[in-house]
Image (tube, rainbow, N blue to C red):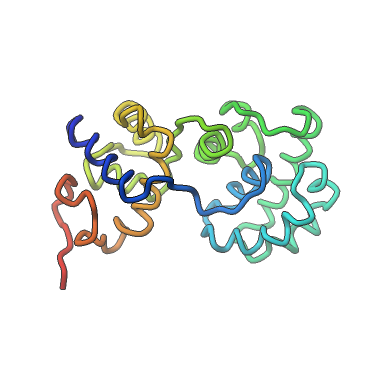
Amino acid sequence: MLKKPQIEEFFARLQKANPNPRGELEYRNPYTLLVAVVLSAQATDASVNKATEPLFKIADTPEKMVQLGEARLKGFIKTIGLFNTKAKNVIRLSEILVQEHDSKVPADREVLQSLPGVGRKTANVVLNIAFGQPTMAVDTHIFRVGNRTGLAPGKDPLAVELMLEKRVPEPYRLHAHHWLILHGRYVCKARKPDCPVCVVRDICQYKAKTVLE
């Protein structure tokens, strides 16, 4: 497991390489961010962006989404996996936002998780990006990076999340999950990590590092 000075250096280097990281999902406001993240479960950000670009032009508020209706929504998102269930969840959560939350996305994890289709990871993404809360949304990339590098080992996503909350130095907490997702997506890849170009390769505790061929 990495020690405190190593963790500090780990994030200092990720910050230097990418000072202003951002998620790759396109959105217009907290509501469209919430919808995009719900749609992104078991789907790529690119596939979601392709579907939501025309969708958000006509339905970028809960009221407009409810008016659009489940059947028409399916037409926009049919290229995304599990689109039937996701369409049902998006319409229902939109109805709840209108009826119970004055059409606003709540900045509260428990309330967010009570919405259809919203799990802990989705809630954490929304809280981080829309409301600037230093949450750790642990997806498969962060889970892999946390375990592989020795940064935040854990047997499941929640364990890694809690470890990151404890171990990430305060100045890096707001952007930590973005740095780690992007690092896992483009460098510390699942099948073959690109260790030769990794900015933290000398800190990382992964034993089977790849080398230049």
